[in-house]
Length: 308
Image (cartoon, rainbow, N blue to C red):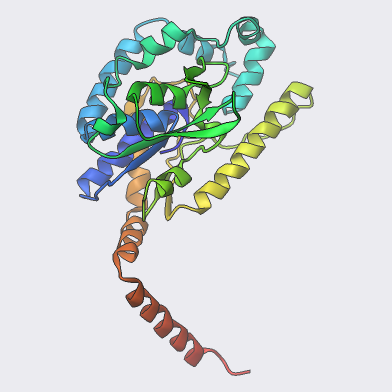
């Protein structure tokens, strides 16, 4: 389950379809909001429960004036660009973001961040989840990718979701951890390392916007965005099936329509159901049987191939 902030709510729709189709989920790997949804579901594998719980939680959250809502409202209605980096450039131009982050670790304080996430995350160890769970974070102190498969579920999810500059880094031993999307936006490698034979990747990232700016700030942010998009494509190539809910135009801080995002996850998964079942069936077949099929296919192709 990949990162995408608010767009990651689509993951709940994916899980609902899996439940309805009685497709087993043997393990879950998540990054950023995908880590939050994956961790919640792993602790209690019940999509309907978490859809209702998340809806109630976000209604309560939206009733309060928060910095996340402040960030979203800073976006100009005339600005047709989408994506985290375009938003950051816009915030810095306005001066709000730069003024706060020049003297503090993040726009949102550690207390606010914990107040935002802790009420929804069970206070348990990852080892206690009903489904094996892992999530990815980025250690900016030591310059490495970090995978949590044990320890505090809350700490792991907070680390994986810590958008640089927006949420404060999470300190864990000698590590300073930020959002896992900087090293593995969709955690395909994480899932493989955890033992998955079939990896269904869910990508809820935004599309690349048209680029016509020339300022140094825009160029720096754009170059970083291009790198992450390119690396994400390499990761997705390693998955057996990729699901792309069409939520890329939703602002990353816009949690106003959770049901709509969840529905997009459902529809995108239903469209890929044949490919998902085929991947599962292929993995379940003995290797010798698959080799026989390939051998027969090669002989048929050889017979029908036109003679030169």
